[in-house]
Image (tube, rainbow, N blue to C red; front, side, top):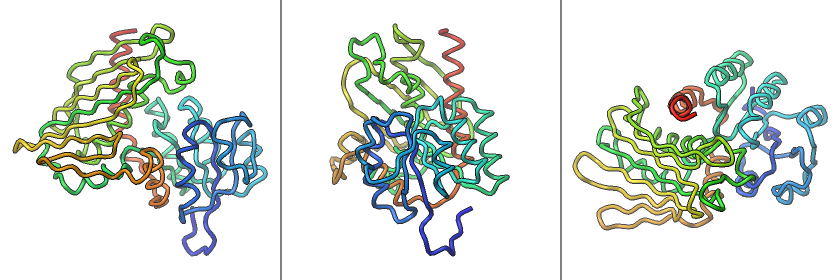
Length: 314
């Protein structure tokens, strides 16, 4: 457990130096919540290595923990590796931040949060969409009981031919897992997730791997109509959402350009690149608290949808 009376900042390490580490850089270098002292990756040539050249580099979590005294491990590796890495860190009495999605097995999520609680450690799943500047400003404008419908649409350029998922994106586990968790974490800011219903889905699998390349999911969450559509086929990058209130008010949020448009007014928050802003806000506001209940609620819906389309489409 972090000792708040300690005048020295907690010592942290980052494991996983893929492309997302480039977006972590500003947040990790400016936060006053902890001090990044080392990095780790199985590949010394990973793209994010250049951001942290001055720090000690290790090629395994075992060597990292043997050589460094850590209070916090930040895990930014593919989802398939999260369980073993999180468990290893917790068993060595190290607090953990893990990139979303946490784990693609609901019982294992419960197991690891229980382990963290038993050992009085922090386990926090990072949901970067919650930390968009436009999202943070939107929260104060909308009350939960006012919402009638939410639509979220995500385009990512993860296919070169509209039928196959790029080899360097296969580790993301498909369109629904990768972006569905982003959309759900965003929606969770407005709704309690007391109950949900899967109404309908259109899921198209890639030709080269059994993962969705397109997913359109209709849900009802807390009596609010929800659609989440993720499309990797069109070689474009565009994130947007619409929130409809019961009085007819419509908010259009252009997440790619960090804009909110409502009542013919436009508010823009693009003072830095979108993902850098997300992680800058996350790391600079990190409070060393676990987010067990939020993570369980988000992943319950995420994995229920996954199980449903696997049952129907496999």
